Image (cartoon, rainbow, N blue to C red):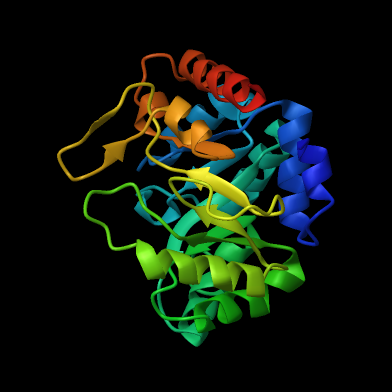
Length: 250
């Protein structure tokens, strides 16, 4: 199904926008920009922004975050036409995550199109984020599966994530997962830990190839160190984009 057709299946404006720009830009690549220096982050975006549909950030690891970071991120997003996914991994009760989403020094709701959450604390976490995020047209991904060794996001836990996504489908736009979990084209599956070759790091991260991710039903591959640590991030981003798009079409 074309991305433009899938955009018509959801009422969530962020999901609609995501599918539309994936078709417009012909990319299903998300870059995980896990950088701790603001200038390096901006430099990376300037290099690879045209190749991606989503930029994944960890705003709280940046040591020299400028006061106007929100304005700069929104300008870069507009310039290169991508969505921003703040990988906050909310995991608290509904009232607390609502405050974490809207308050503090980051005010995530004001610049991040997409956030994600564990379902460990029950559906209240979705309801809390939804209460403030839905009026702004934001979208939520549920962490249904993870790429780290011996993680506990399996079995009934994963199934509950799927059930609650269906219940709150106006706000939940999909899943962080290693494979497609539900045959419903309104939901997007984003797969982390993707590199061109399989392997692992010394902290339990297990790398998956684009071929395996797409074969298992992933819509968007999330690539981090394979791009931002490369000598030529743009060349690598083009490579991942080309491979993932070709696999999606076959």
